[in-house]
Length: 447
Image (tube, rainbow, N blue to C red):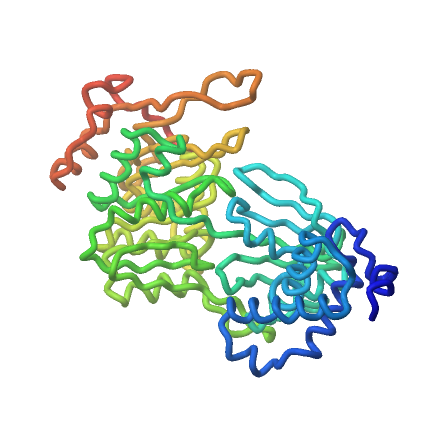
């Protein structure tokens, strides 16, 4: 093809803002498949495979492609290779580490979460068919399928991101895809530098972990429960055997003796499901020193409480709840969902005996994540639930800039908690003793 013909070719016109239309990308993807040796590609690593395809696409464009600027050419090569190897228009979003969530509400409606805030992006799929191809590429990698008979699927990308898919007729707006990137592991000091807590609160929660308190990390969606659980795990001694149990493996512990367990959804025939409860029960036979449960949301709560009550002190779990009161009440509700008919008083006894501390997280209106409250369980045996607040975040009135500011308040630790820390050889931070906000920690009943 001559230069004049290439410039005049309407179908390959470079006037598209993204460096090539959907037809251009599809055309050169077909040409690419004709020229590459798939067996040769299969033997290469992911980075080598991408580099190889980029060179081949470059040669094709040089030989018979449109006249493009350097930026347009690089963009078109990236789109073609992304469409061939990755997730097409979503690939640049996946590679952007500042993005924590990608939400596709149809071919032309893509949103992301960045720094705790939602924003719409101009990227879009060419049509619904291209979106379905991307979805099929994701779910087929984990031996799942999505169609009208199975319109909801949970899957995971090879790089670890968690994916949820729901399609018509359940999703009325079209195929809906949600990709949640697992946050990188933050240390407790990094969370403190980000304003999630102050130094005194960081010292207190790390002391609870070292003294083997059973801890519930509670909060709403996106408040940083897994991030805090990761940060707390760095204070677990290296000589302990840790079993982690999750729906999707997100925890990134650095201790040398870790066993990571992950639940399994049913297959296309509805068989083979392994639940969190199955894994909690199995973990008790694995001689764990501590059990970390990514999230309790059902009948496994009773098994976790029993584990905490029978020699597995220092265990930690996360829970969806809007306050510390909601958290402790919800634990007893979830435990009642077991197939065992346990009287409510007995469940209350289990919760009071098992749970020592609840750390409540929240996300402010400007996207900041904060430790909203730390409460210790003051009730015993079959008493009504009582919580004593030992720390919390007290926000200031929101100003014109809509930025949330405030300070962390501290209260004296209850005597049994302080004595337990002292017996473990851990010094009680001064902010929770002599210089506290009040003479005693405020207690209230959780109903």
